[in-house]
Length: 218
Ligand code: SAM
Image: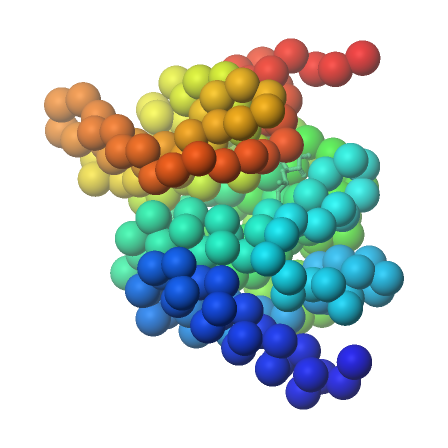
């Protein structure tokens, strides 16, 4: 496939998978028309890169379905000057989409080989406002808190309370919560007193593994 074919595939993806399902935020749509999703995958997957499904990266992990990336990004209600925490860097694709939309992204990945690959491609593409570290993201990133938004791209048994503590008042946390087979995508908005919780629909993610997630396997 030529670069123009990929650009065309991205436009089609945005039209048929995102706009058709109700994603309205123009900035999100523009970012997803721009970020070359295929480059975050092994070359063998490039022909499928803009399909309506998640795809394997390595280490048993996945790059999320484009619609889910768009839905979670839209749910953060970004204006452009935010500082965002992402848990689950994976391929780095979601971080690249966020990089188009906000000032700074702090992204945590527990598997170092994935973090290394993500760093390489983000550098190659010039996404310099993404900082990645390898650790258990269920503890958040204390030194950089508070955040305007937190996006968790792996499914946990509950909302890690530490992440709520690292959210600004008015900030949004988007996270899949449920069992290991299916989850509900939740948006939690931090209020002066308490939290407002919204159900954004069903989804299926790989496990959020950590001290405030699922226990380490094996
Ligand atoms: N956002 C990614 C992307 O754009 O490719 C997709 C993320 S993938 C669905 C989930 C990722 O979360 C995996 O790479 C997995 O290793 C990571 N993960 C799971 N538990 C984690 C934790 N406690 N801290 C950091 N990363 C974690």
